[in-house]
Length: 17
Image (cartoon, rainbow, N blue to C red; front, side, top):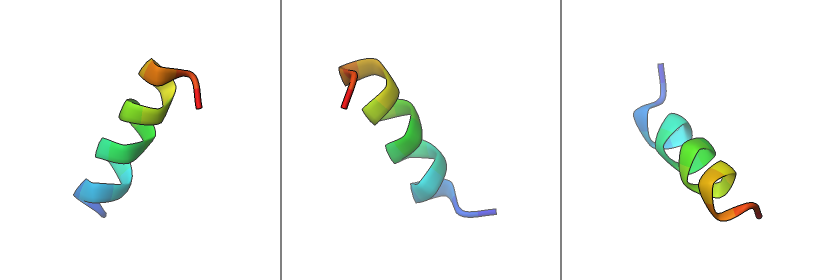
């Protein structure tokens, strides 16, 4: 389980990238 992958997925989802 890649924590960074999850983090960036959430971050991009919030920013709408």
